[in-house]
Image (tube, rainbow, N blue to C red; front, side, top):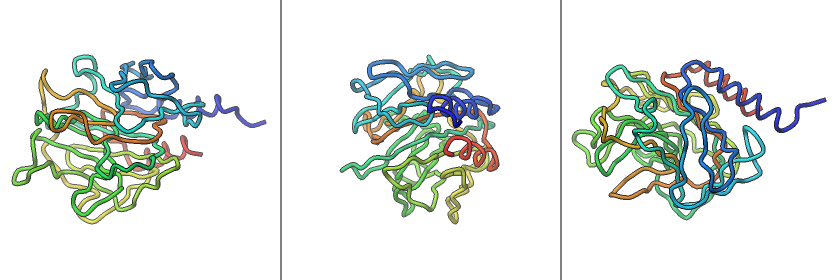
Length: 260
């Protein structure tokens, strides 16, 4: 007799929770209007920032997923999530998400999660889709910054690992990026989506330290031009942040354990 949907979701969640270096993991089983509370060492609480986010009966870690409409997003104030404030010359990070990317009239880049405030030049790290720099479109992207502001010599931050493969819409995929202090790497379904020059992307210098006034942790949007933007649209089935760069074998194992 096979596992029930709930048992399968719990087994998948356990594969995430057992991975060393986990900071927080959200499974998005809560209903609209509720804070999304993380599992793991740090039970940080994601707050809805643009009205109640409904849930769809199509989950990864249980029956449900957050059904994020265009313009909706979540946030945790910086002071309320100190373990997510990864910074300094030795900083490492992994951001991993289970996404069911939706169709939208919006064609700009879409933020998944990170500490990334463009308005105040407080960029640290963020997982994106469809970043649209360096002749890219619709791939997994891992943005990193050691300076907070634009890349020297450019109008915007241009430092990012960018994969080669467009992420299919309308179906579940596991997207992730890692940064080990020397290279950023973008992964699609547990596989390094290699691209010459841009994945892996060489970037030494660590992550920017925004101090007490730095970026909040935001999900499905970032602050840009003085207001939220770069909205993600679609289902969000899970989100995990680690304080280290997971290896290629670990991400392959995690993809297999959570998508089978």
